[in-house]
Amino acid sequence: MADDIPMDVLSSSGASDASSFCSTGPTTPASSPLFRPSGSDDLAVLTQLAHLRSIESVASEPVKSVCVVGAGYVGGPTAAVLALYHPSITVEVLDRDPRRIQQWQSPHLPVHESGLETVVRTVRDGADMAGDEGLTDPLSVQKRGRNLFFTCDTATIARADIVFMAVNTPTKTFGVGAGCATNMTAFDSAMREVAAHAKPGAIIVEKSTVPGGTAERVRKMLSTYRPGVPFEVLSNPEFLAEGCAIDNLTAPDRVLIGSAGTPSGRRAARTLANLYEAWVPSSKILQTNSWSSELAKLVANAMLAQRISSINSISAICEKTGAEVDQVAHAIGLDARIGPQFLKAGLGFGGSCFRKDIASLAYLAESLGLDDVAHYWRQVNVMNERQRDRFSRKVIDCFERNLVGRKLAILGFAFKKNTGDTRESLAVDVIRQLLEERPAEIAIFDPYCRPEDILREIMSVAPEAVHNEVVKISSDPYLACSQAHAVLVVTDCDQFRNTRPKKKRATTQSVLFPQKSPAWAPAHDLLCHETTLERETWTHDGVSYQLNAQDACSPNCSDCRTTCDRPSVTEQVEWTRIAYNMLEPRWVFDGRGQLDAAELEKLGVRVDTVGRRTA
Ligand SMILES: NC(=O)C1=CN([C@@H]2O[C@H](COP(=O)(O)OP(=O)(O)OC[C@H]3O[C@@H](n4cnc5c(N)ncnc54)[C@H](O)[C@@H]3O)[C@@H](O)[C@H]2O)C=CC1
Ligand SMILES: O=C(O)[C@H]1O[C@H](OP(=O)(O)OP(=O)(O)OC[C@H]2O[C@@H](n3ccc(=O)[nH]c3=O)[C@H](O)[C@@H]2O)[C@H](O)[C@@H](O)[C@@H]1O
Image (cartoon, rainbow, N blue to C red; front, side, top):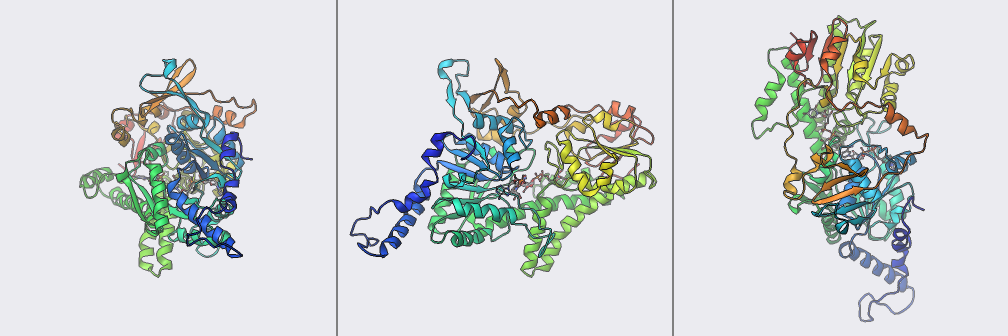
C-alpha cells in the first residue's frame, strides 16, 4: 500500500484499472469491422479493441493521476509545481530510497530551494485559501486538499495516466564508455518497474537527461516487457538550474516535448502540453521529434558550459596581462549577438550535469565516427579542470610552495550559490590539491551544505585528512576564518560579498501574472509569507494560502539536530571581522571574482582575484 495516500485516491484508480480494459466486454456493434462473432479470434479482437480504447484515452480523458519516479532535485520540485497548478490531479512521487521519501514527508526537505518548502507544504499538507477577499473573511476561505504524496511503493505507477522519469543518469564509471557514456542503470531499472506496472495507454515521459535515441529504446523495452500493450513515450527534458528551481519551473524559458510523431504520439504530446498550459503560455511550448528533444537538452548544457570555459580561458590571459576579465566580459556581452549571461569567470563550472552531459555528447559524436566533434566538446571539460588546477596552483605559489603549518579557510562548498548540493563541488578538487601540500588545517564554511555531505565528498578524495581532522567543517564563517593564513572564496554566495549585490531584475513570473501575482521572488524572501495567528500565509497568482502546521518531528530526529548545528548566515559576512582575525600573510583568494578588491585591501589583506593580474 502506498504511504499516506487517502483511500479515495486508491479506490478511484487502483491497479485494477490496468486489467479493466481487458475484462470489459466489447461494445462494438456487429457491423464493425472489428467484430468477429466467434472462436479464438475473440481474444485478439478484445486486445485490439482495448488498445484502441487506451490509445484514445491518452487524448480524450482528463489526466487524473501523475507519478514522478525519482524524488531528487528535479523530481521533487517538478512534482510540487505540477501539484500546485493542478489541484485536481493526484501527484505521487516514487523513490527507492526510503530516507529521501521520509525527508520529503517531513519538515526537513532533502533539497534546499528558495520557495520550495512553501509550495510543498501547500500541496502536501493542504491549506486554507482565499482570493482577493483575503483570508480574514471566513466566508471566502476554502480548503485546498492534499494532492502531493511521496512513496516507495511501486504500485503507485499503476495509478498514473502520466509517468515522469526523473531518476539520476550519471556518467558510466566502468566498462564500455567509462568516463563518457551515460550510466543508464538507475533509469533502466526504474523503466523495468514502469513497464511492469504502468496501465495501458499511460504516457511515459523522460524528464531525466538521457542519450539521444533513448525514447526509441524505451519503446522497444516496453514492447518486450508488455508486448502488444500500447504506451506513448515522450521526451520532455528539464532545464531548471539549481538555486532557482521554483522560478525556472514556474516561468520556464520554454518547455520542450519530443514525440514519435505518430498520431497517437502527437496526441500524447498534446496531453502533456495541456498540463503545462495551466501556467506556461502555449507559445513557449515547443514540439519536436524525440531525438531532437533529447539532443537539444545535451546541447543546451554544452553551449552554456562552453561559454564558461571560453571566458575562463580568457581569464588565464588576463592574469598574465593588464586586462581584467570582468571588463572584457562586460564589453563583449553588450553585443546583442553574444549577450551577457554565462560569462562570469571563476573556478569553472561544477554541479552534477554540465560535465557529464558534455561527456555524453562527446561520446555520441565519437560513436558516430565524428572524432573531431568529440574532441571539440571534450576540450570544454578539459579547460574546466585546468581552471581549478590553476587556482590551486596560484594559492600554493603565493605561499612559496610551502603550506606546511598553515591554516586555510574555504568559504563555500556547494557548486554554486543558493543550493546545498555538493555534487561535483569545485571545492573538492581545490581542497584535494591543497592537502597534498600538508597544511595544518583546512576549515570549511558553507551556508547551505550539510556537514555530512561535505565530509562524504572529501572522504572520497582524502579520507585521511578527514580522519586526522585536518579538514574541519565549521557552522560559523568567523570561526572558520579565525587564525587563517588565507581565505579562499570558492562559491559565489551573496553572503561572501563585501559589496551589496546588484538589484535583481524582475522575474519573468511578474510578466506572466502581471496584476495578480506579486511574483515568486517576494514569496521566497518571505515578504508576503507572514505568520498570522501562528499560521504562515503566502500569496501566489491572486490566491492567498494559509499553511497548515507541520507534524512535529520525533524528539530524537537526527535532521532536527543537524539543522540546529547548521549555520544560520543569511546576511553578508563582515569582512572587517574576518580580516582582523586572520594571520599574516593574510591572503584572500577570490575564486569567483565577486569581491571588491580595493575595499578589501583597505582592511590590510592581500587579494588575488580570478582573471586579474595579482598586484
Ligand atoms: N539537478 C538538476 O539541476 C538537473 C538535473 N537534470 C537531470 O534530471 C535527472 C535527475 O537529476 P537529479 O534530480 O539531480 O538526481 P537526484 O540524484 O537528485 O535524484 C534522482 C533520484 O532517483 C532515485 N532513483 C534512482 N533509481 C530509482 C529507481 N529505480 N526507482 C525509483 N527511484 C530511483 C534516487 O534514489 C534519487 O532520489 C538527471 O538525468 C539529471 O541529468 C536535469 C535538469 C536539472
Ligand atoms: O541540466 C542541468 O542540470 C542544468 O544545468 C545547469 O544548471 P545548474 O548546473 O544547476 O547551474 P548553473 O547556474 O548553470 O551553473 C553551473 C555551474 O557553472 C558556474 N557558472 C555559471 C555561470 C557563469 O557565468 N559562470 C560560472 O562559472 C556556476 O557557478 C556553477 O558551478 C543549467 O543552467 C540548467 O539549464 C540545466 O537544466
